[in-house]
Image 1 (cartoon, chains in turn purple, orange):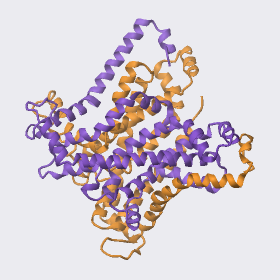
Image 2 (tube, helix red, strand yellow):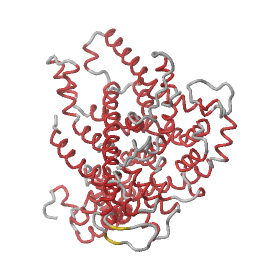
Image 3 (cartoon, each protein chain N blue to C red):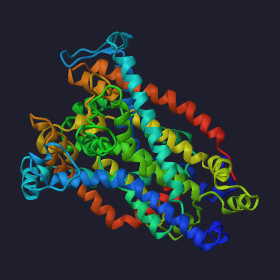
Image 4 (cartoon, rainbow over the protein chains, first blue to last red):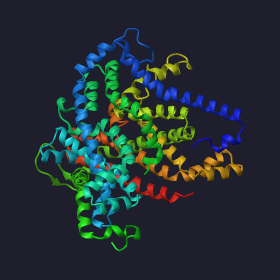
Length: 288
Length: 303
């Protein structure tokens, strides 16, 4: 996408001026759309209770950053939430990627109707809404209600569809030569999957992993129904409980400090991996 | 097996063993999808026609009683309409803003990638967090109203989320804001997949920017439209988080989408009626997705 044709045909100064106008407009849009909400989030998380009573865009006159941090960590059970979120997110993402890509390889290379029928069911799970109440019943019958394990399994079962769908489409477009060559060289099924297929689908899996991480880290709906008790709560649930704990409505400074801390891990990961995330998502990974 | 193309022929030497190992590789995924999607989905459909509460151990069929009860209480129709209103609002916000941003940020250069990164930030936030942030920004005494106060006499203290008339639009906007960055990227990918020669030919033929957009980009973007419109619409039928963080279904019942109603029935131990409302979401998804995909697919053309 270097040096697009229209720019070359136009006289240079005019194209430059147009680009400047466009960036000015984009900046004017970005200020209320992104900068303002995040600014309000940050400055109010630094304020004292009384000053954050009405949320404004002004800087704090008295800083309460450390106090708010302490309150959120102690009363907001931040580290318990962080620990639980990690306990949930890591196995869910790894499980979804591993089991999803394994299934996708089968689905992409089979002509067996019965097997393909399960593929279509899996693809349906992307678009049809999850039926939560019966899921809770199933977990109760399996003595997994309220536990983190039941929640992990339910998340894998409902989030794996996207990975299976995207990866199956991708593998179907790959030639069979690599797999055949590996087989002739004496590799077994697992070795073919691990050493041939997995490296080939890495880019799709990365894009899928980004979406799954965002989705699982932020999940509130399933957590609300499936997790019982403070000790098992993930970050969105601790945030919700913390925000609703006050008798006098939302205390913006504390709620926002919790929001900042809850979002921080994802934002850090995003800043570090930003280039790869962007290129992965714009190269059509989502539409498959 | 015989219908396979010749490309796949070498793979078919030992069909029986092959097939079995394929099943083993797909089995874990199949089981998880089965237990946590297929079984609950069917169970939900069945249970919505039963009398089932947390106060007794017996579940008995009662036909359409749950639906009739939800209908006569006004919950069924109202929540369905609110859900549709919410979904249409958020779909419109995401696709209009997303497409405009994609057009502006289509070229990959350094400035654009900074903008893309910035506009993607809201996608990372949880819908819950987005709800809290915008509750503050849209507070009667918050920044938006202070800004508007500059233009009107006196203090502008309209309660965007607290007023019957604007609450649904406001929560729909917040949800749209949260997801817009992702929709933008899908449209950018779509725009970049349009062959350069087609666009260049149109420029030589003297087509202006708007004409090129209308006659070339919009038709060739059809797959991206299909994906974005269906996903944003259908996805927001099961929204709950943004509403829990902002209005909790209020003021009155102005933002009680179906999933809020499902949670309320569930909280009262009325699992049967809860299931019937949840099944209503599924029906809504099917009734929207099937005709929409059929229609949008028909519009898809290739360059």
